[in-house]
Length: 291
Image (cartoon, rainbow, N blue to C red; front, side):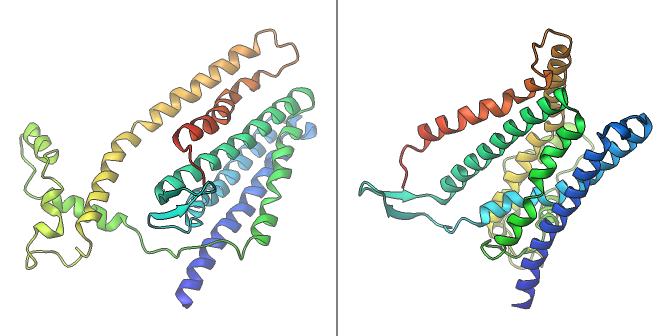
């Protein structure tokens, strides 16, 4: 019980402390846009970079924990049968429920991004960058209050250790005897259909099974899917470099065009605007039954 309480407290403190670090970064970023600070270009740039670094550290601390925290609030772990408002008996799928919750989770994120980015663009265009940075800082200051008043309502699951170690062990174990001086043969061996099948506990005699192999066949399948997903993730940096450069080019091109009082940074909001429209539409198409 003491370890469980410590784990839950550690998770809470990670999010809370990271939020406070991000707030400090927001404040420094706001200071970098004050006109008197901008009079010194080197000082303003140094303040801006320090603010970005501190805010990035804070964001990196709480943002990866928010999405898992949302999933932990889902009470269902198995499929159940329920009765909807029209008296129909339907199957409630936890996976579909989590998918739908995340759809609306990102919907509201993009609503906030749309309002914030448009407000910041107009604030920077008509007033100054100090106001553009101050607006999200004021909104972000509400986070500690939300965390405090909702501290007893969150459902937290204690950490159960990292899966990276066992996953790497099973991966290296699967490679035994598959390497060759011929690179083509090595590639074929490492991509063979039986690469993961041969390392499933059910296919290894008990007397030859390593002591660290305490998982089942389903866990090996999950590791396999994880490594397959990594092939896709390897291309993400190239995708985001191209995507961000596309946005930057559009924004730079718009800055030399006739604006008519509209900030050129507004073009960056096409993505959240499309998501706000698309998510409810596709939600009604995919999940027509609501209980």
